[in-house]
Image: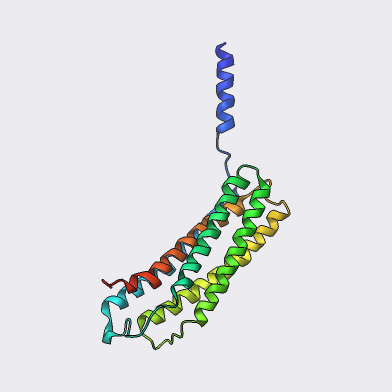
Length: 210
């Protein structure tokens, strides 16, 4: 009886024991994490510049009179689309791939791809719309710089995401979904950057206290 109990205990431990990742999988996750950590410092330099120029406000040129952000619906649409795309990806990854529901994974990846492409289009429209010039002060310069760089990130993200969706359509993640997991971490980071950009460019500079 004791041996039988021990057998069932060992079987249960093996069933729920985490499966060790292969070296390739660990390197894939490491490279993704190194990329978005480096990207965090990259965008942090822009945020530092934004705060620094706003505090210094040399010759009152941080935000000259008459300078405003583009229409608020543009900023809101951008961040909402990226957050929705990230949420769709999360659903596909956690409730699709991890539970063996690959049809849900494929659907959510295509939804996330479509939302990201629309977000790219709105970002491009935003950069052509505001009527800013680089001589318009510190806020305008940083606005153009941050949104231009983020738009480039978003274009590359959309292309890679479409590639991931195509691979999922071909059933290539049924055995190893490390690419989906790694890109999911990156996509979550990108959604966080989109939110920070919105707060830094559309909200904070126009608070009365600012």
